Length: 340
Image (cartoon, rainbow, N blue to C red):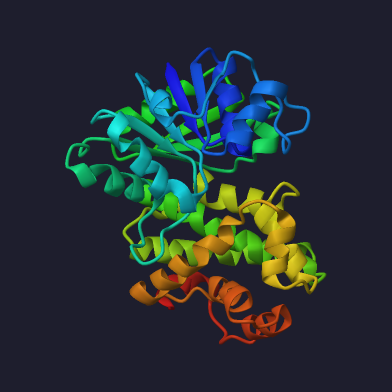
């Protein structure tokens, strides 16, 4: 296949390499000229040590060139740039184009997922109503994919033919893809798991151990499932790769920038300073405004997410939030679906 990757961050570069080694013709575009120049000159990525970038991959700073005559257009830009990049590609792609999004987040105010943002922005000209957008999600760290370590992902789209096309693209790679028609559930989990990873990092920064982490992950999945049900998503999605799988890997891994930011916050660093120290996009922070709006819209109680928001945006200390969580009204675990 001819595949173009928009974005030359760690995830975009790792995916481009995997797809190229599988025999696809791959092009990488970035709006950051320095990223393209570094890849062209050195064939390495500064945040993926030890990975050699294949010379066969075409590099471009021209987005129209990246969009020309391709089977799959893959969005690998941070969530806050998905809408603007979609606007840039609109004049250059045909109706019916298969697009893959790997960013994870929800847009504040519109409460659109990434695939909904792409569709909304592309169809502003009334000529892209049939674009097929696939959400590619799951427990995936670029650092491991860049080393060809086994990885499991889910290709989600209401159009199963498009989902299967993307699934097929990863045959003969280190990545095994499953399909799922519950694209909203997949994207919701992908956004919320980053907030859970912030919570896990804060817990570790406070000196808590494995018991707290396991409880946090379990109750976090319960919160995500509660909201997903209210939004018409499938509970099984929350128990799958995009849900519990992604929460586990993001909450517990040294590769997780969300966990790293939370760790620093738990150790006493102000949130803004912690985010700056991580030095890369902390998507869990970006997801908080939309998550709080969803909580309000669906009148569902999500105490962990509300607690993280209180720390990041309201100035409460992690210790205060932990005390509030542990002193909540007692409940029966088996009846959690019935309790807001």
